[in-house]
Every structure is written in C-alpha cells, then in structure tokens.
Amino acid sequence: MKKFIYTLIITISAIGYVNADETISLIKQRYVDILLASDIQDRNSEFIRSLDLLPADNELSDRCIVELYQRKNITPQDITQILSTLQTDGSWSDINYQDKTCSGWKVKEHVERIFPMCRYYKVLVENKQNKEAKELLNTIIKTIQWWTKHNPISPNWWHNQVGIPKTFGSALLLVWEELPLKVQKEVIEIVFDQHVKFGMTGQNKVWKAGNMLIRTLLTNNDEILITARNTIASEIETGNKEGIQPDWSYHQHGSQQQLGNYGLAYLSTMCLYFALFRDTNLEFDDEQKSILTHLLEEGYGWVVWDKYLDVNCLNRQLFKNAASCKYLIIQFCARSLKKRNLKSPIGNKHFPYSDMTVHHTKEWMASVKMASNRVIGTEPINGNNQQGYYLADGATYIYIPMEMNTKISFHYGTGEKYQALPATNQIKRSHKKKLKSTDAIIPISWGEYPKRCSG
Image 1 (tube, rainbow, N blue to C red):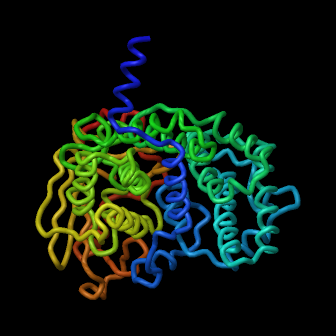
Image 2: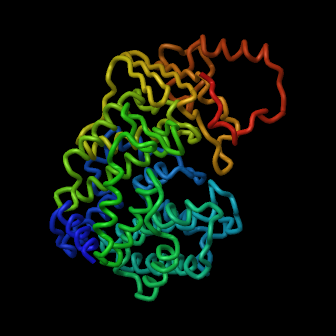
Image 3: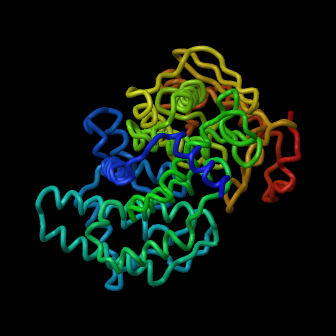
C-alpha cells in the first residue's frame, strides 16, 4: 500500500494537478480541430496546395501518409464517390473483406472511408444543412454497426491494435455525441477493449498509448489520462537502443535507421501531442521540447532537400510519392513545433549511429548509406521490400534541380522535378552489361540479415 501511495504522489507531482474534466474537454476540442484541419490557417498557400493536389491512393499502408491524406480538403465529390459503392448493410461492394494481406490489408479501407464521412458531416452541420447531415449520420452509424457486428480481424497485430483504433477513434471523436449509446458501447468494446492496451517499445509504444488516450477522450474516463500522457512522454529521450539516437537519427527494430518510417511516425505523433497538451498540466517539459526540436532540426533538417525526403531514409517505405509526401509531413511537424517551415542547413552531416552521411549545398544534395557490424541496413516485413536487400550497400543519391539536367531520361520518384546525374545513369548501364539477368531470388537469407556486415 505504501508503495502504491508513493508512486501515485510521484506521478501526480511530475505533471502537476490535473482538472480532469476541463483537461479532457480542452484536449478533445483541440483534437477535433486538428482532425478537421481547422488548424490550417491558409489553405491557399503553396504548401497547402501541394497537400490538396496529392493524387488519390487506395493502396496506402504507411500510417504517416494515411494521416497526411486525412488533412486534405474534402469535397462533395469525394463523399459521392465513397457512397457510390456502399451497400444497404453498411459494407462496400468494392472492398475485399476476405483479404488476409499483412501490410496493405484491404479491409481497413472500410474504416478509412468512415473518417472522411465524419469530417464532411461536421461541414454539413456547420453550414446548417441539417437534412443532409442527418442522412449522412445515419449512413455513418450503419457503417459503424457493420464493423462491430462482423468484427474483422487482421492477420497483422498492428492493424488490430494500432491502425484501426487510431483511424476509428479519430472518426468517432467527430460524431461521438450524436451516436446512440448502444453504438457507443459496442464500438468501445469491439475496437478498443478487445485490442488496445499499453505496451511494447519505441513508436509502437507511443501509438498504443495514443489509442488509450483516444479511448479516454471518448469515454471521459480520467483514470488512464495521466498514464497515457506519461507513457507517451517517456519516449522523449535519447540514447536507448531504439528511438532517438545521440546523432539525431532514429532506430527501430534494432540498430536500424528508420527516419522515414517509424522515426517520422514518432515525430509526427509527438507533434500532435505537443499541440494537444500545450498550456495544460500535461504539457511536455522544456527538456522534452528541446529533444523534439533537435530531432527536427539536427535530424530531419539534414535529410530533406527542397520538397523531398532523402531516399536513404525511406527503408522499406520506398513507394510512389513517398519522398514528397513525407516531406510535407515533416513541414507540418515544423509548423507545430517551430511555427515555421523547416529549412535545410548547408554543409556536411555524418550520422555515426546509422552509418549515413549527407552533404548539402544551395545547388545540390547527396547522401550515402551503409550497413555494418553496428547497423542493420534495411528489413523485409509483411511482404514488403522483398527486393531491397542491397538498399544499404553504399546506396548513394544525388539531388539536383531538373533544369540542370534536362537531357537525362532516368527519373527518381514522381519525376516531377529531380533526375539522376549522368554518372549515376551511366553506372547503372555499365552494371547491366556485366551482370547477367536472372529470375532467381536474392541468394541470401533475409533472416540472417542483421548478422551480415557489408562495411
């Protein structure tokens, strides 16, 4: 008993006295404002136009980019398209509900479609379009009830414990007071109580604590509010095996550089909670704010150039538009922490904990990444990155403006603005002459990769 009382006193004194009802109400309203993109002051800025012009993509599996797309401006046409394949039972005819894919689990699209419907419902209410709002709310309730009735389970724990509760919770925050009590009870039980608990390490730990926070906001239960906040804040530190490294890179799944994957999710998530907890007794302390700012400036400041994130940071999240989308995410983080866009420094930066070096000038940027007996180069998970075994074997990327290299036909990423240097393209062609084409799989076991050294 004495130990319990002592722990409770330490916990409360660490963050100060909390008026639970007022704090929950304030955090909930801030969360809703962010979900509605009300925190975006100027939707006509070049930065925001880049966001709204992102092409539609139904194959998104990266959590950061899913949430980036959620901030896009929503139109009546978007809702019409979503409703065009909705069936009377609350499911969609074009979703494969039998899918068992680990990474891009198709069934999650059901929840991802509920979120924009909830956002648009708030627009209709604000515009006093009461009839349309009521009709859309009834449709939203039907889609929620389909999920709670069938309770789809992904073969990947992450969707069940992180992705689905995060997206569902965000949608529910927008319409919670309008839902019947029976629906509220069912969705809490099915989506949260069956799957959401504290635990794990690194960004997974933060995600799960964040979902516990959402449950607190929905149910006005302050019992886990402090625990959720403290669990989130406990990851704002450096020097652990996983998480922020002393050189301001980020590791997850062992000593593996994950700036564009788990690290970016970490930064984005922490910036969300920075905004939610600001000016309350739950606010991050000065040291924690300093760590996040240094990660942004001394870590991410060096791996972005113009409007792209360096490919050497993407790891297994190397896919179409990833570099440009993740650049936008970083800038959202900068606006949250610093109230301004992030600008890249000029000079050279070596990340000794991640075996990566970058060099910036005003005209170009270059980066090189290696694996070693200290650092894991990359990984394959859930069927991703099966051909990426050599991504960290001295992979070098050079970025220059397109106008400096208009005659080269080889394009990186979207091909919108950057191209490979002639030397890079020539090396690629010369290797094709020396290496015989084969359909054989990479003749080295991925399972042994962490033990392999390439430098």
